[in-house]
Image (cartoon, rainbow, N blue to C red; front, top):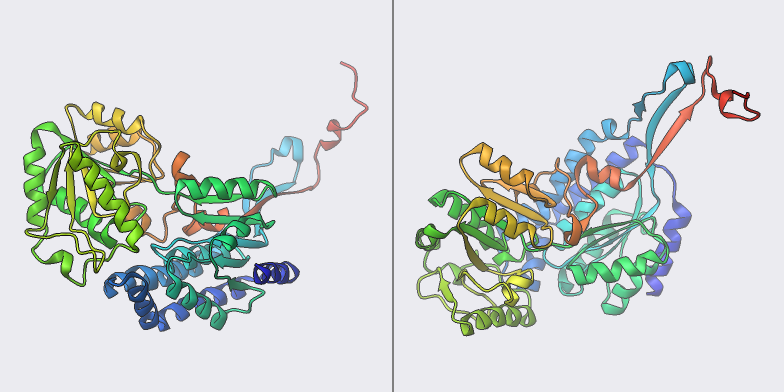
Length: 448
């Protein structure tokens, strides 16, 4: 905690506004650092998880960060340019008005364990593009990744520009109490509430990304829609904040959905190097408790992979469906964050929409239909942080698309131009010209 205070104070003293070329240089060094460190990042992810596919690590933790940095560097001149606003010449003469974007100052990032590089260095891209100085607090649940993250940042930036502080619960509690100029936290809703209460003492502006129960509303049950849902759920064994958390399907198509889902999962998958381990025994026990509760209630539990069983030694669970679970079950009350997919049925599409709207607003919402009008109907009548039509989670991949939640799934945006603006002070500037009538605002006023 002393290190945190020291680096925070050093960054406060060093605050200034970097030029376009300086910012592009910062982004270029960050992209080069993660690309060069790819083998080290892949090894760190494998050590912390036990089993983590190298290709997935490369796609998300390495190329994801480098791609965001390249996108920001390319578009930064346009993002930094003042945005002119209309000033009525009859009242303000030749005056000009514009929004200008300036750095906020010293910013903090509290990053999660499921994407330890992407969800720390990705927001760092936005913050550097906006000209800020940054301190990152990585999750203690992925200690090897946290130490490597600190090494990479130390090798790439001066500590009064970007720094990483590693520690456990005490540091996590202390971090949001500092008077940050902006703080980003990615985690669950319970953590988000604690961070928000701590930050409120300093009126620190926040960006919170908190996950939630993301629905997949399926109108047309076919091989492609089921493959997209099951495939997305398999990524990182469902330990993704924008993974589909439950499906809503027509009541007459349950057997078809099950058959198509089974056909998508090959034998031996859960024992392969492509199947990510659940992070810890505690996380594994939580998921198994969800399944045990649903089983005890008499619900149909379907293991999609032939002959597969839970492997406690490697902390891996085969992809599993729960058919029509009761809404009071833990699996329907909490974000699952694992390879378990509840499948609920509906009679009419509007019934499915009403079910979604009765819960908290999700981080992601997915609708599967070949009919554009139906997709529009669902999107217009629901609210979510992001959405996809006929696929899942891709809204969290595009470097050009701002990402964030709404309601219980968080607030604020990061990534792309929205991230640049989120971490910039958006200052309205009025410059007086000639031929105005501004003096009419000043007393004494003429009597009517």
